[in-house]
Image 1 (cartoon, rainbow, N blue to C red):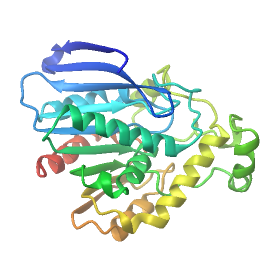
Image 2 (image 1 turned 30 degrees about the horizontal axis):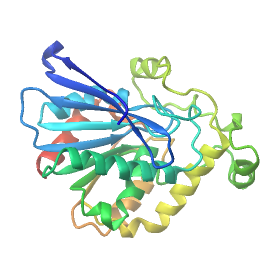
Image 3 (image 1 turned 45 degrees about the vertical axis):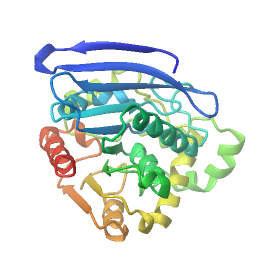
Length: 296
């Protein structure tokens, strides 16, 4: 552990203590992490959250405070190449590195909070990382459940040629930005204020996707498609019907094929990719919290 900084936020009745820290991965990279702890309530559960592609854990501050208000301590990690963590911005050499970092981070969180049930939350590519992590039987035994919003289980390249060239280009020119695969013009929320906040955030990457990163997303989604039936952990998956980034039908496939005895799916008609930044975010957060509360 390299540094720790703690600050308390009592503004607006939040009563949250935020902590920022760094930890060294098994590769020697430094990952930035943060946590939110309720000041007035006893902690009765843990939530580890993973952000989506091109964003960072700080975007989930409002959600973390809602969880704090229900007695959950929340941890967030900026995965490699994102936010405050090491690496070229939005470049991911291997999503398996992110999976391994998630396992290490989970062990760290559980060691700091013995005896508390731990849940994992992942959005989009963060959801794919969570899924692959929990497919490890050793991890599944340590997690009380997972929540996924718009998980990247079914993702199609923006142009068919990308799928053909990605394996070769990702080896020869891994950092090259494929302009035809630029997702900046794809609507991810129907709330213009949320979009303005996202794309004015200096820690949010707005450039064209890097070839290696895109290839890694295709690779992890292909793996998950072949292994959905192995998921045995309790889960809740939420998806917008009009999501054009990750396929809502893939979430339905996850629900149907997973071997979990405790599984739930919610499809929101007309909503887009960034569910927690849609106009209906309060309802969506309440649905997630209700699911968590019933399993603590």
